[in-house]
Image (cartoon, rainbow, N blue to C red; front, top):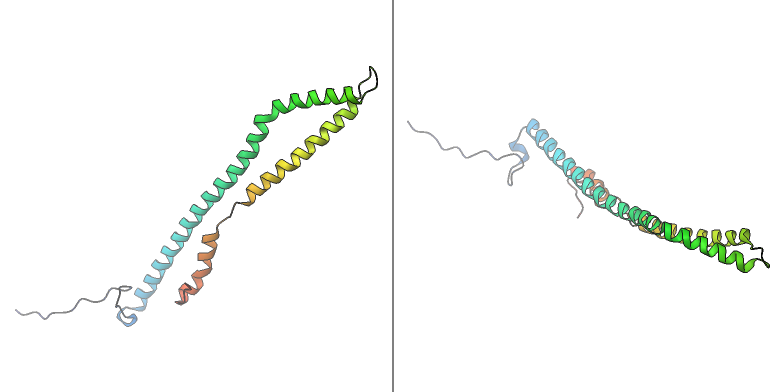
Length: 150
């Protein structure tokens, strides 16, 4: 009983496989599989970039909150001392000018709040978003056409 040798058929998508070697159904199946893999990879990239962006945003927000919390009581009592001292300096005789002193202390705190808000915004602006995901998603239509850019 003799058998003839038949060379193995090329696998769709394998190096050297010709489009004519596969049926239309196999080609669509391969495209579907590749597209599914591409989408899964894009989602994984988006998750990684989101985690990194959230870390930067959390760090900035934590810094702002920590600065406010850790100095609250010290600043409260320093403000009261400054308020009282300014009231004594601005007052005449035995009557301190506590109203004007309170206004001056409030203006000082407004300037400090503006500086801290500016620094916090600068830190939060360092959050980049999803730059790699956006770049690779833009390449999907060209990759599907077989014209992926380097």
